[in-house]
Image (cartoon, rainbow, N blue to C red; front, side):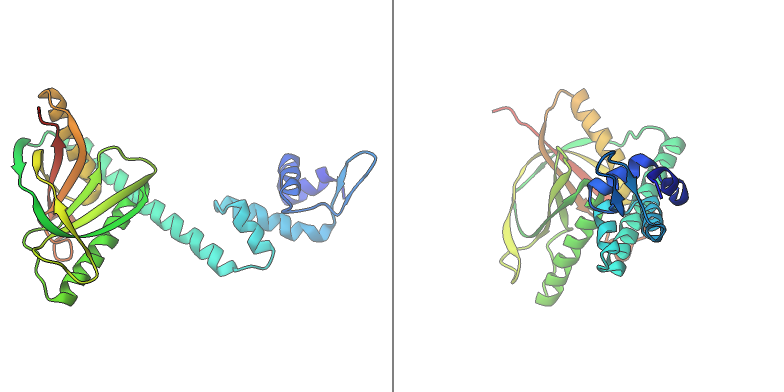
Length: 258
C-alpha cells in the first residue's frame, strides 16, 4: 500500500515514516525507482504500531530498534520504567519545594560567617547528572557508612558532602567522614579550612536549594565573593530521621583578602 494509506492505518505521519526509513528502523517493502514513492506491506503495520506505542512512552528510537530486532525487550522497557520513576521522584521534589515557597515565601534563614579548621577525612568520590545528584550522594554515603561499619570505626563528626558551586550537566561530589588515620578501601584526604557563610537547613535534602539561594543572596548583599565550594554537613542521620525533620548545615566558602 502507498505510504499515505499506510500512515493512516498506523496513526503515523508520512514524515515520521520517511524518518524511520532513513534510520533503518522501518524500511518500506518497495521503493519505486522512477518516482521514489514508498510502498509498505500490511504485515509491517505491527512494527509501525509498535514504534508509535513505544515512542508515546518516551522510549528512544535507538532502544526501539533493539526491541524490533529481537533484543533485550525486558531490559529496554525496564530501563525506561526506571527513568520514568526517577523523573517522577524529581518532579515530586520540585512540587514539594514549590509548595514550601507558596507557604513560607522566599527563604531568609539566619546566615553567619564561620571559620573552619582543616580536618583529616576519609572520602568517597562519585559523579552523576545534575538531576540525579541526590541519588549519587546517597550512594556515596552508603559506601562510606558501609566502610566505617566494616572497619568498626566511628567518624569524629557528621558526614560532609562537598559539591562544586557551579553545577553543570555532570556533577562531581565528595562524601567525607572526619576521621584520624586511614580507613581500608577508602581514600584519605584533608578537608581544607577557610571562611564560610553558614546557614541551617531544616527539612528534606531535595529542598536545600532554597537555603543555598538564601546564602548566596546574603553573600552578595554583604560584599563577599563565593569561592567555588559548597558543603553540606549532615547533622541528622537520614537513616533514622524523617525527611521533614532533617537538619543540615549549608556552608559556602567565600574568598578572603590576601
